[in-house]
Image (cartoon, rainbow, N blue to C red; front, side, top):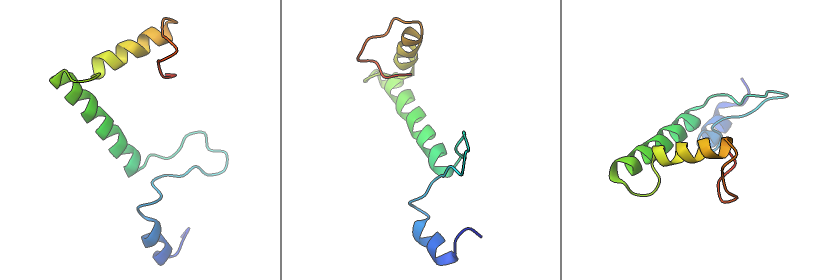
Length: 77
């Protein structure tokens, strides 16, 4: 085991994933799955309600930026 039971219980809500040694890809975790679910839900809800930027607007901005047509206000995709 990497840690004793008491430490595991104490840290179970703090540590959602970790990278070991020279790993390039972090391990998939429940926390990252929840983050993806929440982001997808937010984008779909914004798309449905026409409030803010939904998934269509976000993907269009990403495509424009990748093609060299973005602005300095766009995040780095």
